[in-house]
Length: 523
Image (cartoon, rainbow, N blue to C red):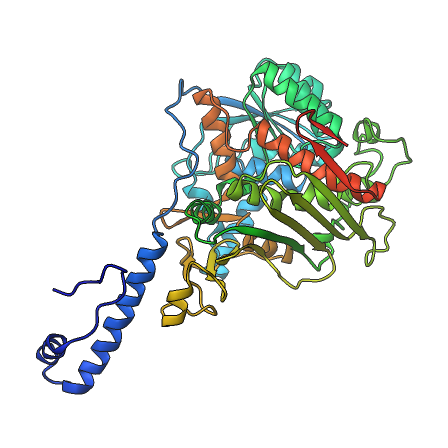
């Protein structure tokens, strides 16, 4: 029987191997033996590499949740039913009838368009959409229509009871029939609404950026901890299977000592640069402008500011609060980064000269001297050249997206012998992990493709495709029933918020910013 030596090097081929090869390949003879010998050598090399890495291809375990304490129906409220709010409600099981029609049409025209099939296959979360609130009456009406559209397997598209529409979010929070709320408003409302909801005893799912200011981050954390509500920040990347596998790569020290991490955002279409469509029915008569402004500076009614609010610091948190946070949260999952020691940032408005005051090109550099590495973020909203997420170590580097690839560094100490023997070729990955994708993802816009590539639209469980937002909402609902906190809880959210704010302060005040972890202060 073939053996490997004590150093796990492949055993050499001897006379017995030759006789065995010829005996099993009587027709092909020497030619067949040559093929067999090559295949066997390749298998031995693969086995040697597998033993060295100790990495399997089985799906990683994500966020185990204990059995629920009860199985009661949870009554949800949605505050803010714009593009993201509609996606969140759809993930909870309430797609608007027009979206169902669009999916059905897409499935007929393209066999790879699985959006409707995936939606029907989602588990019924045993929730009802009981209350909706949006300052744009057209959206409130659309949310109400979606709330009654119970379009799941076994329901035959039957209509349920429509949600109650509230003109003000505080009225929704005061309703004792609402158990939990999803907040998907502009960023400048996130902290206040989340704190008001927690004080009203409602569980909270809030979109990122979590807060508009550093002070709000402290206040929200304190409120959530004091009230004990179940809190989930809207980073659906927490459900991405490749991120969990990347964490395993780090834990097994496959890359050696890590020294540099690069993450980026590259987009090149108006929607990706927040130039969202303006609804034809929008007007001062259909939009409650004063309620939209809330704590923001008072300015005259503006359709551009209402629909494209991310372009202004008055309402949004810029590239740092919107898109950097996705990249940071991915790395925080994989590496447990925490809040950095320091931050510097730069950028400007270089392409979209449309009246915005938020940069469309932005860079931030975070230092982690206690870990001996740097995290670099770079973004442009006017170039689609993809650069991905890369974690670099002395012995190897890892590229992470909706899948992941690990490469050995040509000058690695750990893999020196394997490189010299030819078992490892630095130009080829030593480990590749592609979650169970079988079909082309049926996504349309450039922005959707951007999120899909980053594992923020779909992921896989047991070879089956799922909407990551659905999985993130489901985790929150399951944790409410189990009485525990989910994966992107207030502690994770606080780390994200402070990290993003440090870059924003560094940019806007043109100075280097530090985090005093003992005093918990940005200095």
